Length: 225
Image 1: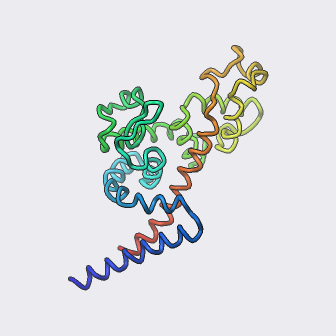
Image 2: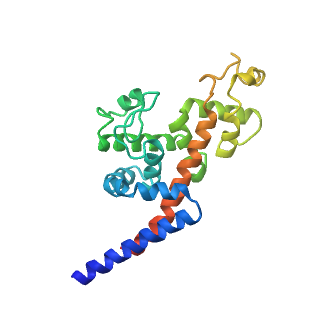
Image 3: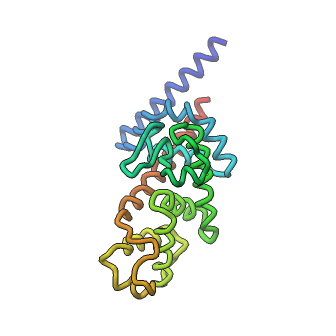
């Protein structure tokens, strides 16, 4: 029994060294951050897996979202007022039935359901596109994504592909009023100007980078079990 435990411990140590060594060697700072947060990931893994499975989402995607949103700080509060592990805005938390956004399990349960709801809004997109568009909606708001899709369609682009939406998010600012007049009778995007489009673009990129690293590292972790 002791030998078995020692063997498992040695494999876990080797696993950590492999991940850490790889991350530092290639200057993969996303990987380094995941390694630093690994105790928190392990702490909340079961509850994340539970709610991700309920909504048919990859638990590693939900984990990547938490890493980006709060770095697993359940008491995090953003300048805009978003709270908790999943950085839910008060209005969204209320709509999801989350009474205490600082309660980690409540936050995970509500936000995972919310992410699935967003994913379901884009049935005409392929899975990889749906994931990225849902993440963009989580960060930038469904309304701005819808406006970007409308512009993409007007410009004969691809309103169901993330790359096209990402490009058109940048056309939702005051400098593009001429285009807005062509698209909308009121001459302005229905959900307002979107000055934070660069942040949303980077947000999706970072979450997907964490997700990809988690998928890679989980293969090593399985070997260590």
